[in-house]
Amino acid sequence: MTDKDDLIANALDADDKEFLASLEGDRGMFQQIGDSWKGPMGGWAKLIFGITTILGVLFLFVIWQVAHSTDHPILHALWAISGVALLVVIGFAKQWMFARMNMLTILREIKRLQVQVAHLSEQRD
Image (cartoon, rainbow, N blue to C red; front, side, top):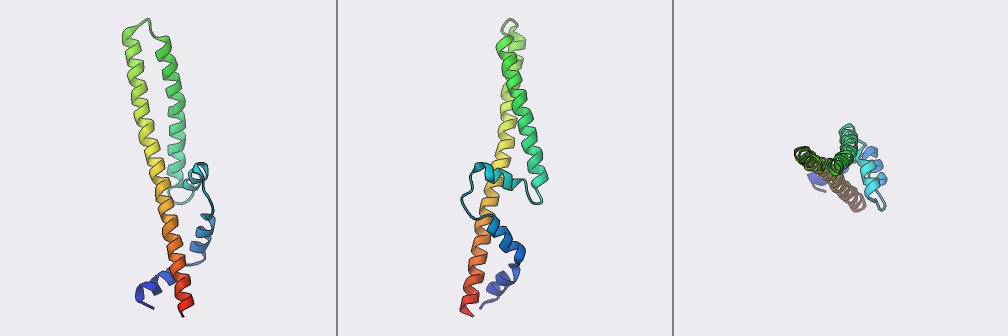
């Protein structure tokens, strides 16, 4: 066994195997969102989700204002511009959230490979 194999086998502990077991199975979008709320960045993920939800409700209000401010062209344009700005901010927040979900998916695959290498090294010994 090489030094790298020894390092990988020693790095795997009960927490790693438990983490890998929690990631097994088919994970839909809502399961992945829930998984992103755990761990060291879980608080940030919850905060971004909450902010995105609030901005979504605010966007609905802005759309309502755009629809009902047709009498005043400048006010109508300002509401429309604020709606576009809200869409951009919501897009950035969702991009961060989906990047985190993708990172966790990649981490899941790396952990799976670590466990497979450790099992193969145990079988070889």
